[in-house]
Length: 141
Image 1 (cartoon, rainbow, N blue to C red):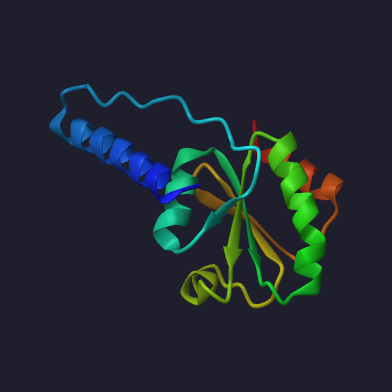
Image 2 (image 1 turned 180 degrees about the vertical axis):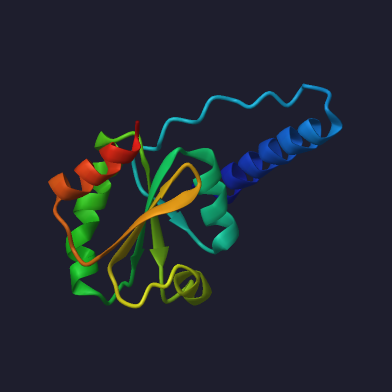
């Protein structure tokens, strides 16, 4: 997701919240966006929070470029992005150490599943497509 797209999303959210605070009703909450068909690479807590607030279910893959198991998991994450209504997010732990610490990521790969804006699950290690799809689908009600 480009910086322009993220800034547009931030602006829309800001306008909705300001409208709700004013009580003028013009900030009707839009329908949740459909999830992108490829993983979203985020850099920092603000970008992650924007994605979490825009999608009902988000699976964040905390990875490192030097991690072999992370590379094994990457095609699975891409396949999930194509085949589920959840947003897939990739977070480089080397570039986002504070964010990784915030979610208590102690090893990679670690996946954090967010449902309705809250942490619902945390998975450490490589999992197969069917396991992760089942987990995601269980939260997509």
